[in-house]
Length: 278
Image 1 (cartoon, one colour):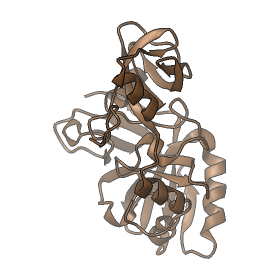
Image 2 (cartoon, helix red, strand yellow):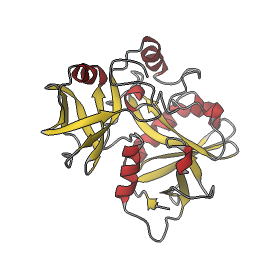
Image 3 (tube, one colour):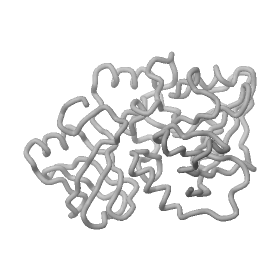
Image 4 (cartoon, one colour):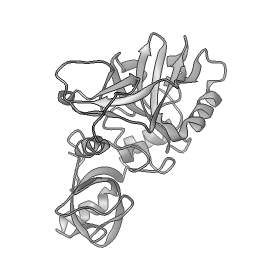
């Protein structure tokens, strides 16, 4: 059972009688269907529909939510939440004593909450509290994310540069497509109903070590995207699926830098790289 302390993560608590309605009206996640003991991806968007902050959200008790996010944007996220709170009866606070740990492949349900971005059979748990005395290598966590097509801002995309559809939030419950209005909802809804999402997260594999994150991915010589997280011969990338489909139709090469690669769609995603809906 790998157990890894994510030292670059922090936790914000949003609690109070109007905490759920406050968050439901501003973030992409549909909290009305979020069960206790479960954790889902989510985001706070710009009015133009791009991801301003990404996070994992879960219930922390009655009228209380836990937002698990990148530590380096703590001040900015708190300020943004305070800006939207207005008169809502919800307290926003940084949980300084809450550390984030992940574990998986545990036979028991265990503590913490289940990370719904991963297959249920893996039992990926997010634990909050004192970090473990010892933990496994962080690379195991990055590899798990790669294998299952789970993107996070930082290495996979820059905040303010990606739409929820780019990172498959429409596929993994990161966006509540049937919920009411939230910041940026009109753009997300338009992309969904018109089918205009052209950039998508894919899994990258090569027969030799991949170049570093940020390296350009080309499809038949045309710019298609760039690498994100990389672990040896495997990685993630956000690419133009139309250009990849055109290259695949001609059996043309796809490369990351000078390294030939193959691209595949995460198992949970409902699109293909052949110009069709899966």
